Each structure stands twice: as C-alpha cells, then as structure tokens.
Length: 189
Image (cartoon, rainbow, N blue to C red; front, side, top):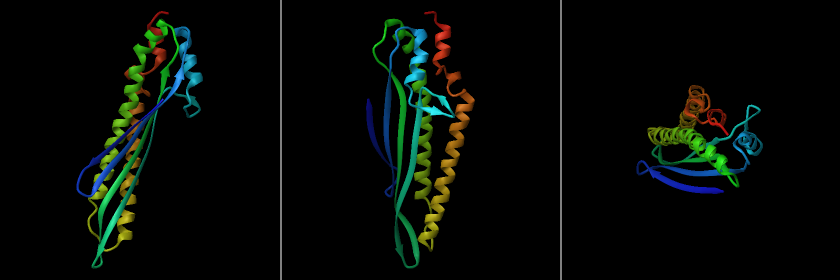
C-alpha cells in the first residue's frame, strides 16, 4: 500500500520546501514467530551492500530557483526545494496470534528508526532551502548558480555523513530495538 503526503512549507516570501513523502509496504506473512525472520528476508525488496534490510528510507533533494536580473546585478527571487522521501517498510499480512504479538513488540522500533532518518533528511532539506534563498545579490546569475550548486551539494554530503553516523551509532537501529532477531531471541515461541 502506498500513502502520499504532500506538504508545502513556506519559509519566506521567496522560498518554499515541497515534500513528497510516501511509504512503500511489502507484504510479509509467517505461521510462527521463528519463521518471521526468514519471511522478512525473503519478502524485502531492499538490499544494501549485498545484505537484505527490512526497512529503508530513500530520499532525493533537488532545488530550482528563478532570477531577477537588473542593472548588471542578479538576485534569486524565488527558490523551490523539493524533497522526495520514501520509506520502505514491511506490512504483516495473514498470520497467527503469536506472530502478531512478536510483530507488535518489534515493528514500531523499526518504523521509528526509519522515521528518524526522515526527520534528519527533512531538516537538511529545509537548511538547503534557507541557505539557497540567502544567497546575496551578485553581478552574475551564472556565479549564483555555481554558488547554489556548491551550497546544496555540500549540505547533501553533510546529510549523507549524518545518516551514516546515525546508523553507525545505532548499529543500523539495533541499539534502538529495531532488529527483529533480538526480539525473537528474547521471546519464547
């Protein structure tokens, strides 16, 4: 099932952040809790570094701006930053009560870990939008375009480093209870 949330944030008269946020679910079913991990591994469409992952947050940040050029000066008069944000998460389908119980003890932690990635991404998209809007009037629109590319790409690189650090700090969510295997080991069948 796919949900679409379309948000428009206006930060000034000339800047706006557009967020297209969706969740892509993949179906998982198992007859017993001890089969749930295998079912997740088999059903997950996401592989990172040749490993199956159960949840993932994809994003793409782009920006566009319009100029006002007059008397040998160029100024950005409008900035639109667009964030495409997609969560890929499992969805439990037909299952037993024991599987539902194991799922309910685990799934919210996985979803929260992925949504924390989303919050970090949204915050950076907002920073990009604000910093692009703050580029001062210059003598050349081409120089503004180059400066905008430098700013946006540097912030996207910073975001990639933040997301990697978050995953390293949490062992990809394990310290936040986002690994099903830990819940299955702690709970008898």
